[in-house]
Amino acid sequence: MTPAVTVQTTSDACQAFGAFLGLDEAVQPVVLRAALADPVYARKLVGSRGSTETIRYLLERAPAVTDTPAEYSDTELVASAVKAIARWAAAGLKRVDEKVYARRIAACQACEHLQAPPKRLIYGLLSSDDGRVCGLCGCVASKKALLPTESCPAMDLATPGFTRWGEKMG
Image 1 (spheres, rainbow, N blue to C red):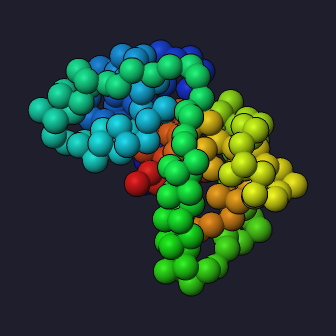
Image 2 (image 1 turned 90 degrees about the vertical axis):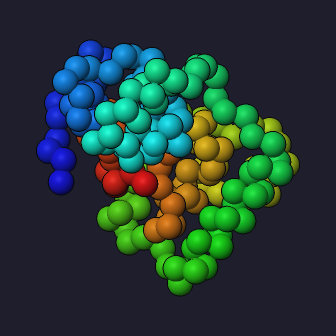
């Protein structure tokens, strides 16, 4: 298990993430931002630990990150929801226990990516006391946090390789 790291600055986070990836130096801030914003890129980096050539290749090609929330089409959102429901059904339609849900939803509520749902039909169909959505994946956070088959798309700055829900990426 990776030990917890105290992170107070972006520089600290870059250093911690570089060390986690097995590098002798900090990653560039653009790499850290890309890994936090793009879960696919983060998984590629984490999965490439120990392969210096692959890590260097990925570091040189960090995807551009904008400060605007992700915008998903209704088709993409429906497809994502169907896949999540299929994974959930295959796992027995169980929900996480109250303690796990409380931890997950607390992380979501503290996250800068949590936002009011866009005024779109797809979100109107999902009735929820808290219909706020994740700006990274477009999911209704209060629904996603209930499912044991789902994970947070953002990496925890303080614990590289783990999501903001405190669960292993991947």
